[in-house]
Length: 312
Ligand code: GLV
Image (cartoon, protein in one colour):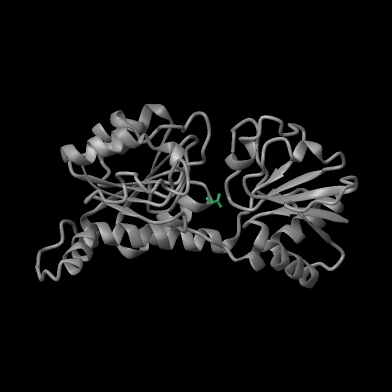
């Protein structure tokens, strides 16, 4: 059976080929960047940000596997064959690493790690009291799917006070769960560190905007580990400059890589990380893709399928 792979650039193809040869030798792995002349019989595609129109050229495609947890990079293709199932790459390690990233960010914000890093660069010894204490800090998580739920649990076990907000009401132990537009402002009003782990959909585009920031307590912080499209960059900079927000930890941008001349690189209130919050290995992803292909061939239901009704 034939699988075409586009994830990690042309140089990653050899690694994918040898990983699949190990975990599922029956899969014939084709290179997206050097495709065969005959595209027939390619039933599976494992992709990250496929170029528009390329998936539509595969006449026998049956299943698209996203190389990441999100599917927005696939849905961006206006010629995407709308009838095909899309499986999201959701691994245990995805949730573990994402929760670690959120915990790391929350701890850097309560201790003001940014200030210490800047001081170190200036050989400046300044002792100061942390601006927050973890046990007195309310972390509000937007998006309570598998990533948000795992992050909420780790933060709560570390001592933070955790609340969450999602489209449909979630039920998580020890987490105050808010739902829907009607409860959004109440959720924001009791949040010292706002964490965005929402899927990127039309409904969530630009949700991290001036209105949202204005409803947080003055001096609140932001962690965005979801998508750059959630954030209105000019609104974030204005909120930081006015003191409405104290600091932001940002892992995602639009576009990526972040422009060399973006003001976010040098803003004193911003910590930039290069979309690394959660990076499952190619081996883990090859194993999961092979499992998904196997389930599909046997006609069994696939986990974490993209749902057209919800948009994620
Ligand atoms: C990364 O952002 C992913 O969608 O896995």
